[in-house]
Length: 209
Image (tube, rainbow, N blue to C red; front, side, top):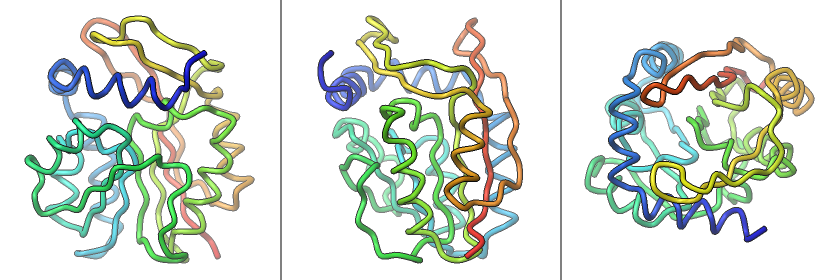
């Protein structure tokens, strides 16, 4: 297998327009439900880190109306669009797993539809780093896998090969709890990539200490 992260970066560089069309077609109903939870929980101008921000629409745009947002993405082309779409936010080209922000810095860390592109052998490490970067009482909001899926490559995902890797929903919830988070909400939400139903485990959790 080629380097999974190179597959993801190259893939998202190649499918900028087709992915934007997919995001628009999926709509915002489920996303809005969780964004509203975040907006109601956090103070205005809270520090929010978004992992896998893509082109910044619609999530980063909405978040940046309320908070100070830093977006991380592995795709340079996606970030180029994000800087145009959300000029008030800050964006960094990086792998999300080994970020070196200060400990206890962010009020919230969010990741929408992005962790399923990270090799699942790195998910525990990623969760531990999120825990480290969050302030006490800070909020984590993630979309994680619903069904067990070892490392796989889809040969043509909206125009490019794409890498996916995730555990089932209950295993993901357990990983979050084992990291030290208190799970506030964990729900399986069905959405549609055009006519294809897809399901993610949406997890909202807080840092206790």
